[in-house]
Each structure stands twice: as structure tokens, then as C-alpha cells.
Image 1 (cartoon, one colour):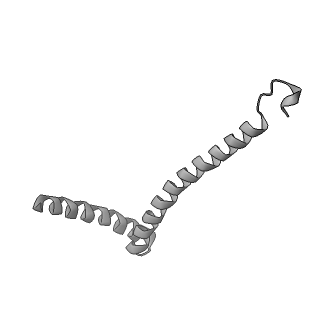
Image 2 (cartoon, rainbow, N blue to C red):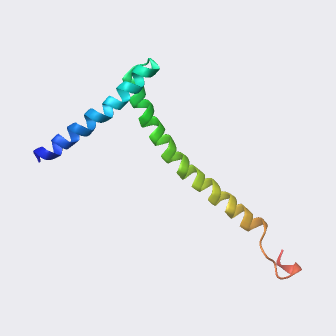
Length: 75
């Protein structure tokens, strides 16, 4: 189990190093960069799901409007 924590520590250290270097280059705090990455992750995942629901809604509306009617009496 110790190897798991060593691996976790390694990735955390390297990941925070990237955020720290980006923050230094931009002149802002590293905490702001980390939280921005977290928020962008949630937004992009939510955006894909919202886009899916939007397309499904419009396809349903299209099917309701443009249905094939076999005769005039189907109205």
C-alpha cells in the first residue's frame, strides 16, 4: 500500500508544480490556477451533457413538426 501513496505523492507533486509554474508566469496565485482547472473540468463535462439534452430536445420537436402523414385526415 505504501507504493500507492508514493505514486500519489509523485503525481500530486508534479501536478502542483505545473500549476505553480503557470501561476508564476501569469503573476497570480497557484491556488487560483488549481481552482480554475477544477471549475473548467466541471463546466466542460456539464456542457457536453447540456448539449446532448439540447440536441435531443430539438430532434424531438423536429419529429413532432415534420411527421409523415399518410392522408389529409391524419391531422
